[in-house]
Amino acid sequence: MNPSSNQLAIKLLVAIGITVILVILMLQVKWAKRFCRQNAFGDIIPVTYGVIPAIALMMIMLVAHTEPLVASLLVLGFCVVGLLDDLYGSAAFRGINGHLSALRQGTITTGLIKLVASPIMATLFAVSAYGIQNWLTYVYITMIAASSNAFNLLDLRPGRSQGFAIISLLGILTVFHAPIVIGAILVLLITIIPDARAKVMMGDSGAIAIGAGIALIVIASSNIILSVAYTILVVGLNLVAEKYSLGSLIAQSVVLRKIDCLLGRRA
View 1 (cartoon, rainbow, N blue to C red):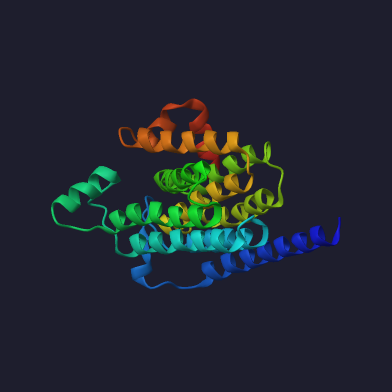
View 2 (spheres, rainbow, N blue to C red; view 1 turned 180 degrees about the horizontal axis):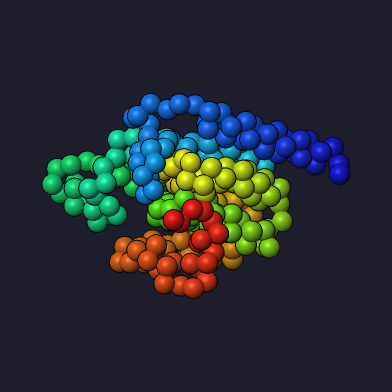
């Protein structure tokens, strides 16, 4: 390893160590009721755990992304918007159509704020980093917004969103061999443990931040084919989810169901 590689490795190890400490501290805190929700198994658990994987990915962006500052700020922005929805959102309105329906009734939901803020933040990142005249800028905007929502749609069972994020990163690793991919995989392998065991609830603060983080890693690859393919994939997931339940589609597929059961508690 050359000196710069050594420094990068040390920084990644520090980020991984901080992630371990944050997970342990999160599990030790007795959270107030306003920060907790009842999960599908009847347990009252923290709904704000997603802040931890978001912080972990922010550190990875700062250490290894080609645009470290704006990338880490983007993950932070998605985390904050998601946290707002976790704490003050309502389950009465779901999906894009649900939030637009609420708006027509004169109600501005936190979900709508999230849906509007996501493409705005993605635009600010892509334009500031790659310029307004680069056609890839618009691919990146679409990719980030669609990826953030896709992983949020997956976050209906313990470990599912983080698990599929890890699987996605392993797929990306076959094309893009880089420290940022390895670092992201390692921190998510740490943060998924209490999530998969249904000890905490990740919430939007983690799911949309993770989705944005995966998109940022694809962008860091500078691989046009990978970027276009990933954009098509996440846009497709969003379109499918408007008509069908992703959870039901997973349950109907033998392969996906088996993979999903490995990602976290299901009964």
